[in-house]
Every structure is written in structure tokens, then in C-alpha cells.
Length: 114
Image 1: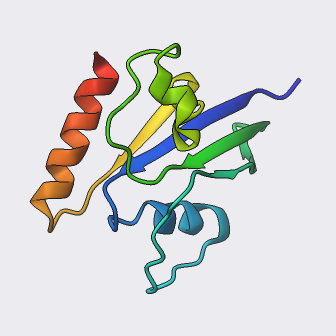
Image 2: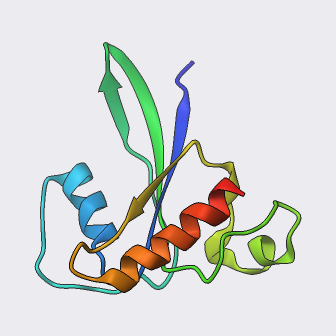
Image 3: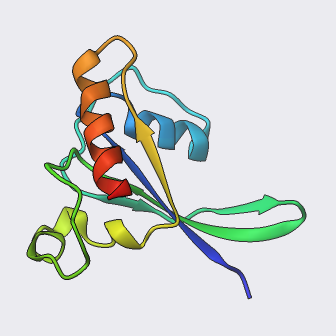
């Protein structure tokens, strides 16, 4: 049986979340910035240490706050947040030239830890 690992990519608008995902999946990079307005799910398979692993990479648009728990109305009411708490790993992306994007990701990281 192949295990599926769920990964969420989070960050402020315009920091390059989608570009990082596309670079990883397709080895391509575009200079054009197209804002992510809805959650995008990619389902690649990777071979690691001789084993095949399925990935579920979720590229999220900027979220206002991390859902406190799975029963919180926000996670189920907001389609883009569905499944955010059940992932195995978070990739937190910020722009090193934009202090606000770093502050945004610090806040999201703290909310994840809580």
C-alpha cells in the first residue's frame, strides 16, 4: 500500500507559493504572477529511498487565520481552508524583501503551534 503525505503551502499574497510548487512538480518557472484565489490540489507520486509515495500538495491562497480546530465553523465554511489541519507538513513561504510577508508567516506559524 502506498502512503499519501499531505502538504500545505502557506504564505502571504505574491511570495511565490505557486511558483515553488510548479518548480518542484514540473521544473518550470514563470515570471508572470497569477494570484491564487482558491485552493489548488496537486497529486504527484515521488520515489524516495526506493519506495513510491503519493503526495497531496495543497497550494492555499492567503488565509486570514489558521482554524483553531476541525470543528471551528471557519474551516468548514471557508472552502479554501478545508483539510488544512489534517496535513502532515506545512511549507511556510515568505519574501525575504518584504517584512510584512515575514510577519504574516510568523503569525500563521504561531497559530499552527497553538
